Image (cartoon, rainbow, N blue to C red; front, side):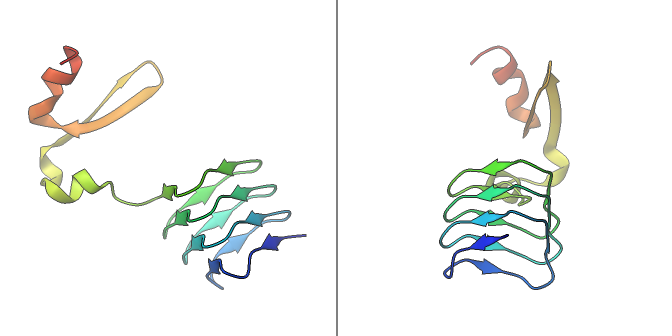
Length: 103
């Protein structure tokens, strides 16, 4: 049984699994797929294109499947992705060398 708070905004076009908990003021947009046994915290926003698996807990004020603010400030062509083991970072190309060096 799903428990969706009355102040949460959930699109009718979102695909929602079973045993979902949606906290107050959370927003779930269209084209969102949510698995079973998921808890969505207060003020969290799941934007179009979000894909959430089973047994996931999304903390308060999380923003899922949204373009990071920094990408809006720089041209998308100036961005590169690099990874250390299993942690990936997306950063402006001109800041990459400074961040790798620890600065």
